[in-house]
Image (cartoon, rainbow, N blue to C red):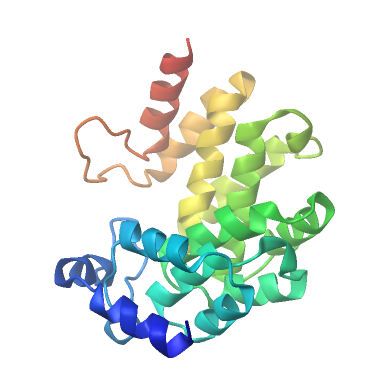
Length: 233
């Protein structure tokens, strides 16, 4: 399939309801997908199309360059993570401008990089002023804390709490999301720091009024931490 063929297929799978959902700003404050950069394809349909195309790294890179949300999500699924250089990844995390794209890129491509390269990128992004690059850095940091063991070696979690307390209130929405995940991870995984993590969450109050579906856990850190700790008891 060519890029033109894929875009035509994605357009045929577009859903008006999904376009509306994608376009609106979420309760996390992250801007939605621009109307001219999406067809509103459901994630299940994107995954099904990826299974049909199978791995095709060159096509994936071409789809990514379109800047089209649905095409980029598909590109991530048919890309070869090991064939993406650190320089390319650094560029891609800055080009992702939609929450789902950024999430998939970090979860499916960045996380599959060799440990040393991934850590170098994480350290770089944690200092970055670009909100989307910083989001990726905090995403990786939260994952390391959640996984624990050797993956978390070298992390100064107390200094991370200092940064979160100081920086999260003024951070851009895309960065706040993964900073908040890191705060929750620290509170869940580190009993000695749990009280402080909860206090920071209460002080900042981020996502306190998050609209909740039945059976889900609110991303408001004090409730999130207490619920997860209770489940593991």
